[in-house]
Length: 190
Image 1 (cartoon, rainbow, N blue to C red):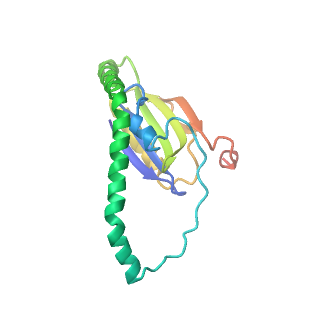
Image 2 (spheres, rainbow, N blue to C red):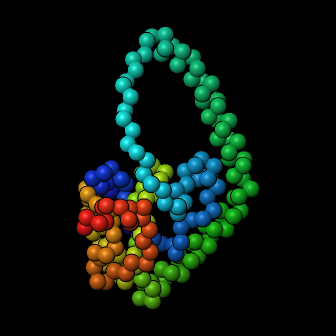
Image 3 (cartoon, rainbow, N blue to C red):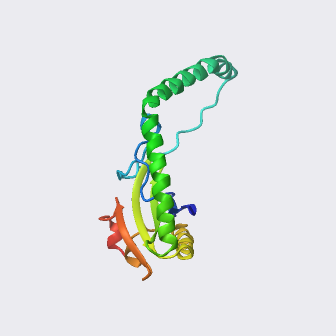
């Protein structure tokens, strides 16, 4: 899998990757428990937050921090172990999906290498845990897929506008495109 992570002019992180497997993982219990799952649901970016002024700590505040630190670590360990035990029943499903992804990806790699199927390149925009744009592109040839990943990474680095697949080269097919910016002024001003 070829992968690149870049930032645009507005600070959004764009991930461009050539995918091995035909789908993204669905069974992700730890991601759900830790609320670290962008899923495939788009959400609008949070408004920018002004940084509060820095607080200066006195010697007494720092002493209290040091004395209470073991309690914080104990609470973190309890939370991690508790969530881990909750995830345990889902382990067989996670393993089954990983095996299915591996088998499907291996078969698809052979078919792609013989020219029977196009390579998949995903372009995803996210800020933290929020997913803002997801595009799946299809292209023939492994070398062309690598080139496309590099081209898209260059295009997204410092980009002022969101991505739209209407400016793709002729040999690239837009399979899916979902974006929270589709109806915004960013598109109208093109």
